[in-house]
Image (spheres, rainbow, N blue to C red):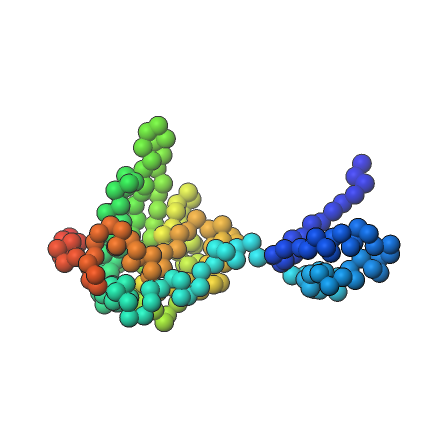
Length: 225
């Protein structure tokens, strides 16, 4: 037999004062429980019927500025070069970048210019023995300027086209809106978001770029395929 039923909520409060808790423990009436200067405002609001729960995804949501290089920086000039490519060349450059990641065995291909099913590239990651497991993925790219955001509608389009047990990669030269990020987190979509600043970091990490431009010999080899 169930005697008690509790429904717990975590309110949006970074810390709770011990002085207030001690005051509550010593209070000799209900009216005095929260009569203390350290009583959190969010608790007063809760008692008045306004429930402000903690946003568990807040640390994961990136601002626009954190998704883009500083304007006029070397990384920004590198990003501008990526934006300057035609759509299909940009897709080939993105695929070329992923192919340079040697730590994971993988196979990745561009889709055709037409009849691509809504995807720009596809492939698989292979976890070697003893796991011997294959992760299939499909990806989409958006060659946007830094002032044009990737919206939930863009991300939902990729999610809707993923098959069972497929992973999604969404790559952009721009940034993802807060709502686009929040939908991926809240709904646990199997999608990884790669904004402009991360794309530049990949080029730097893989030594595919000089100070302000992609290495010409590597770029020519990618675009020639």
